[in-house]
Image (tube, rainbow, N blue to C red):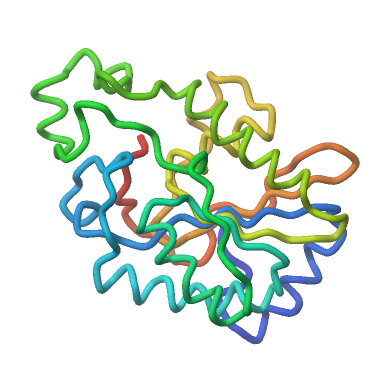
Length: 224
């Protein structure tokens, strides 16, 4: 699904489109880091945004501010907090840090390139299970529970921007949507500083937007 907010002039109609959802979460992936550009597995290693990532965050913040969010919550890792900062400045909101929104713990894979992981851990790579790290179901449970908790704290008609990481967003959203594990791969990875939107109405979640905010481009991510 592409973004319907590619131009600032469309932002008000984009906001109106979602007004019927009782609770909305904008799931915003952090901007680019040097390790993203080098295809290194970041996991929970605290890598800062690079210059490209900082520019991405500023551009995306101008679009997301038009939605007039009621709350901003971010992973406590630096790249997520730095991504949230421009939106906080534009909206006057304070960013709430939440460690449960961190990326998958990558264990022995953190800092390695995809090629290095394939060469050193072929069996684990085939299962996408980092030694000493988190499995996909564990991450889905953690991130999904965090998103559910954030939503429960919102008043009807409210919108929260949640700044997190590629795999945490994709698997957390899949858990919210009630997708069985064998269908998690049907949701593709997020580009840097792109977002998805989920809405809850009559106690059911649905995916409204996915990988919005950018034109199609290669995804630099720890996610599959």
